[in-house]
Image 1 (cartoon, one colour):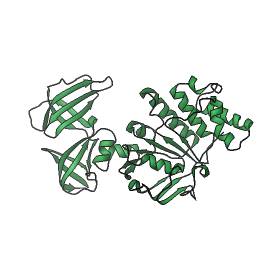
Image 2 (spheres, rainbow, N blue to C red; image 1 turned 135 degrees about the vertical axis):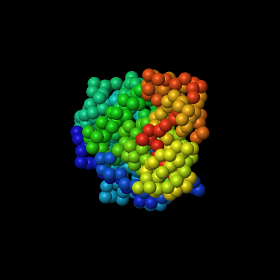
Image 3 (cartoon, one colour; image 1 turned 180 degrees about the horizontal axis):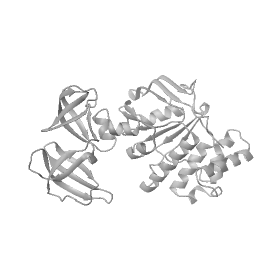
Image 4 (cartoon, rainbow, N blue to C red; image 1 turned 60 degrees about the vertical axis):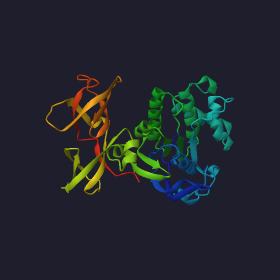
Length: 357
């Protein structure tokens, strides 16, 4: 069984979806290339799930066009689209075995039972559940049920595979393992995948690109690296990972860089198209460096909280820029609560951002 070569692109052209007077998606346009995994990420109510449901044909747009490959599917029902969805709840039939669940869509679609059974066995093998075909869903763990749901979608050999918050019911350790398995399957089989989550770490881990949505529109599209390293505005900076948002001033643009002053500290950063004047700076927690107070000027603060979390240390530091959240991996010199410290910044993880619109 192979899905290589069948994956199709997905394109939205000015798509809007309104429920009465409530606009859930507002003039959204994007292109997902064949074989790409795109994650839609954003807070509750931003429009990401509605967008996914319009790809699936479970919701019809109010305006705009939707294409899968070269075919316009704007008004086609779900049954006429070559897509499969893995739901948050898995939606397994409790009275059917694993093999029967996986083969169900094939049988309903007219495949003879023998061929459906053989294809189901291959799907079960692909998700690492060989030998589990005769078990009932109630005999499986949450992660195993998730794999069955993925296998059931895969055997239909869809042009586009959709995931609607598929890992939200699993514990943290299992989520990490399952997202790796989903990513491996996607890459090995060359699948086009549209993935919806509200979990930033999950999105960063599985995606070729991420579409960050806010208030029914797209805030920014980019690779995980681009969104984390170069967020476009304060919303994206704060939503993708933790960010300390502080006020600063661009004093001048010089040699393609902005000269930025933050309470007496001067630094140079990519100007991001911004002009001299007040600006926001997004500082990643790991970009803040603490050392013993020198008394030689610069930015100084006091540690108000110090927490040991096994893999790293977390601090809250009060300073003239406000309360800064700091992540430190230096266990050799932990800083105690109440300590006076000098604050400097790493070259990476400090970015100029626009005020969110």
